[in-house]
Length: 91
Image (cartoon, rainbow, N blue to C red):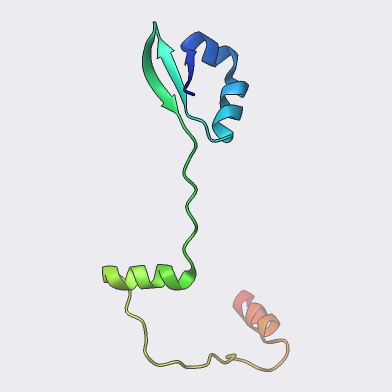
């Protein structure tokens, strides 16, 4: 069943209109008996994974993946490296 509200009714019952849209219904708004707008639920898309996003960028030519897999290692292993760095930076 199609749900139709006049502009006046839609303004007066806005919370009800939104409730119906949240339930999955499409609400039509009319002005002087003529439909002028539809309010419908937003289609929820599943977010792509990181690997999917990287593959898309690679297909678009915006990214070239490295074929080598190198393990990252810390630059400084001694405790307090950050403190020394910040101290030297402020001198």
